[in-house]
Amino acid sequence: MKNLFKPLFAAAVASAVFLGIGVASHAAQWPYDKPIRIIFPFPAGPDFLVRMMAGDLEKQLGQTVIVDNKPGAGGTIGMSAVAHAKPDGYTFVVGYPGPSANYTNTYSGLPYTPLEDFDYVSQLTAGDMVVVARKDFPADTLEELIRYANEHPGEVSAGHPGIGSYGHMIELMMAEKAGAQLKIVPYQGTAPILVDLLSGSLDISTDFLSEAYTEHLKAGNMKALGIASANRNPNFPDVQTFQEAGIDLVATVWAGVMAPKGTPRDIIDKMNAAIGAFLASDEAKETFTKNYQNPSPSTPEGMRELAVHEEALWRDIIKKYDIRNN
Image 1: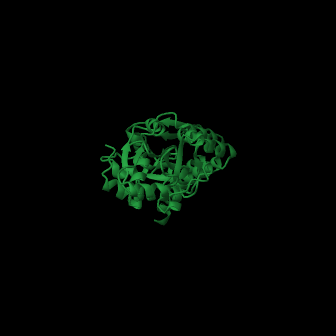
Image 2 (image 1 turned 45 degrees about the horizontal axis):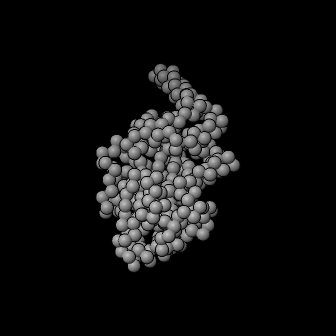
Image 3 (image 1 turned 90 degrees about the horizontal axis):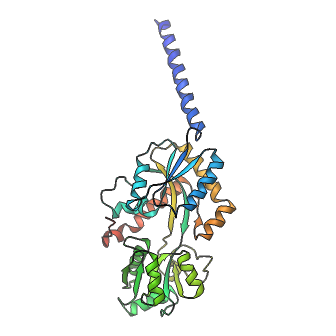
């Protein structure tokens, strides 16, 4: 009877070995089966740094890397497509604070769960948020702004580029932590804010520190009062951080690469290493810096911690002021 089972046992072992070799071979071959696709969940234009990265990843990985724009619904269409994609290491997404974390609390009926439906690969960038004032505003620092706002409650007009934007939430939290009353004014983007700051009809703005502002700051048409990052901006070393002004808030705009939940860890590690090598290159550092972004590679665990911290940081503010995106 024992002899009857020997052929069956041998066949089973052979089959298992064959399948094991097949799985291992498939993992070892990544990414040579087909092109890698990186979803950018917004329109073309702001994706040029991601496209630069894709070109570098092609050289490192020996495979075509396609940047696929899937804009719509504040980034949720592209994020949802990746959340429901096959976790085989050939689909990734560039995540930002809103669709990767904060939409948990600002959107109802999301077609994905931000902190549960993804694996994390690496952070890409971090950018500074700045409080800017009209040039003749009677405060030159964040501390002076808070003092003036407390002395003139509800009189300081504070613009931001849209409901639920980082600028909006920072102004709400800044006012709460400082015990100040600001007259918060929503705008449709940065351009109209600049018009009103330059005309003197708007007192301050909280927005991303981009070329739109730096040109005017360097020309003296407006002034920077504070940076919401952990460290001062090297281009504006005299501008204090929120923490230096006594406001316990660090809030940077970030981007990172994510994958569908269940993507093999060895593939995530390979992708993480390739992204890290790109971000460490002189070309990436120079280009990112010129565009007011700080190359910020991380471990997969660090990227997940960033997203988890993001949601927790703004949860109470979002709920208290009922900030909704839909």
